[in-house]
Length: 396
Length: 238
Image (cartoon, rainbow over all chains, first blue to last red; front, side, top):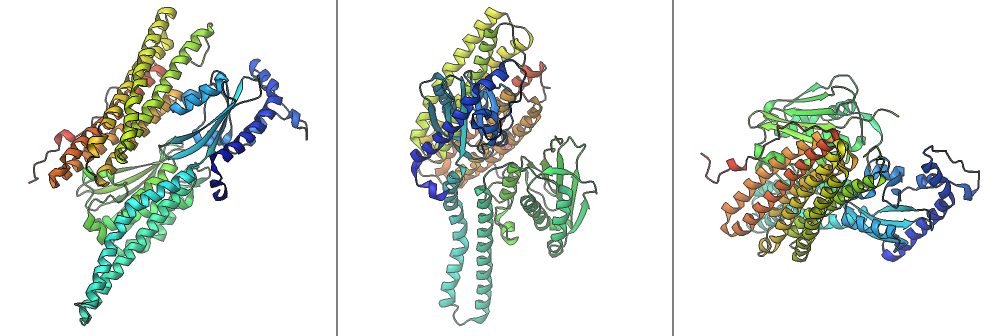
């Protein structure tokens, strides 16, 4: 990736066009077969002869492409989407208009240009902002000369974009957050060299404060790195299934010591029934660690933390709730607690060694899982954080 | 839409309408995203571009209106075809309003960024905008895929947007009380936040229209009314 990065866009276009042209010629060879199968409605499965490139059906080839790829007709109706396309942009029902699927003005222009026949192949940059930021180089090309078919190929460039974004974010957020503890350490060093040089009691006290501050910086850097690592990973919907009840039990087991330190007791209402969800187990462990740790720290007045799971039927969403009985969160803060460095109460957060990033990490991971976080809280009654996972589609 | 008409040209006309709605949707989404980006990055040029983009939406809304009337007159559609066409008219007017709101945000770029503003002023607004954008995208995706089972979700998010707006309102009020020099920028930002909240409402309207197009039934009336900013006052608490 990094070696290609500097070769410039033109070179990359050349590579993409080459790939599209290759797909194109194979598609053309199989074009008649493909069109025929479409018009008589009865899809006859074309069979390739072993080792014969000329009889290779287009759809076989398109399915083998690892980047998202669509084949569409001159009305803009989608005839075929490969697996990568379904994964990246969600499945489409047959003959849905490409213009409906990709609404961005630049995409409409691209499709119009290639269908009008003005150009054989056009490339643009295309970005999606929500729910996860993604950037693509998109090429649309006519297949062969008179097949009436066109191909749209996506090349994921989110990584380069994310690195840029990360750099900007880091400067904006982190420099400010790191500067505060750094300034305090610098101040104490000055005091230790000057006025407090010969005062052992003060020295000990100041060194302790300095140690706390450097630890805080270290934690901050850890969290920032973990957040940016998440952002760096290419976006991919999790496909492996796991039992979330089992996973949460494991997390609770490993966090007994934190419960002990904060004088709270874990109450498990998870039950024994396994609940399947699609997810990355490492990332989900991080989610529940953050939620349970928060409940222990900010809800320590309540002396207990209840973790519960529910799912009405296998077709319904799975809900995991972490409930504490602490002071609760004032209503006006609830919508914003997942923002980076947003703190409800700066003092408490400092005492609890919070970095202001925990819930950002949680939200980030959940967005990638197509899951969401809901928060219920009232002052004096504690808070409950519920993670909603979509049900896994039935096998098949 | 799933079944074909005896007259292929009728299908073509209906498809043309939905393609135009998609085009409007794409513009509206881009305008909202770019207007907030222009605000946050104090990019006056981007702001001007957004203002110009609004022309497209105005023209398209008219075009869709005229086309729809012609189709109704010519084809005398009934049932789902009629709902499709009337729905297109309603959605196009919601999208046109979203464009206006985006344009209004873009117009404020110069005023807000005159004195350099601290980044924290914009963080909440960005978060609010990304909620509203997600809402809009989701609704338009439902229009494209006709998967109305996702619509309940859309209403949930509307509630979230309203809560976020109320919170942002309080925050901006605090900044103004802290330092009167913030008042100019914060007042503009308040209007921007209100615009974004309205965009969320229009997206919810579209969701209701789509539900009607697909199922032929109206969604139940109880729409979440969570905006509590009218209760927030600047007086010190007792």
